[in-house]
Image 1 (cartoon, protein in one colour):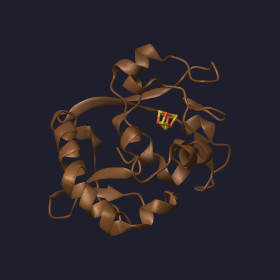
Image 2 (cartoon, protein in one colour; image 1 turned 60 degrees about the vertical axis):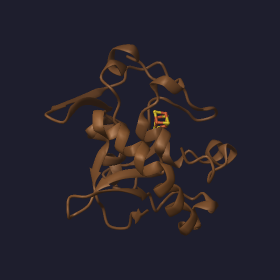
Image 3 (cartoon, helix red, strand yellow; image 1 turned 30 degrees about the vertical axis):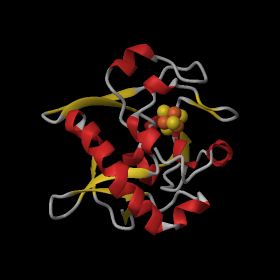
Image 4 (tube, rainbow, N blue to C red; image 1 turned 90 degrees about the vertical axis):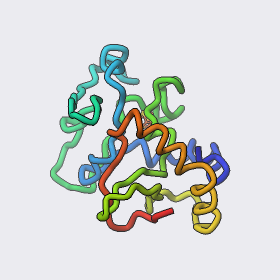
Length: 167
Ligand code: SF4
């Protein structure tokens, strides 16, 4: 989605978005439920623990990383079970969560109830500094793409968090 602004090589050498600090567990991507049966094990061959959510606005699963942390440090990070540290995400494109394909963009509910495309402030890709170009792209295509996906998958909507750049 954001390939005009981030080079694939940058992502390959970074993978920041596939590793989750304890304090950022809300960022763990939501998968459609079939993933749980299709991928009982992760890249390392060990069982993947999933947590299921059934709500009026949709059903999904996330990978449960809670047993991956060794300390109580909120900055300690644990990788997604589908991450190959050398090769990147091991899920095929059709099984990769929408939130991963869209990252570092998010779809967030603002305090007034409106929905906005936002930019994660921690992505280090340098071309993301051109906020004016990002806002134009958002108006031209991203807003509609997020709206279309969220119409059938409202679970991708997160509450707005301070620091996220509204596009
Ligand atoms: S599913 Fe793939 S892209 Fe998404 S966090 Fe896990 S390894 Fe990264």
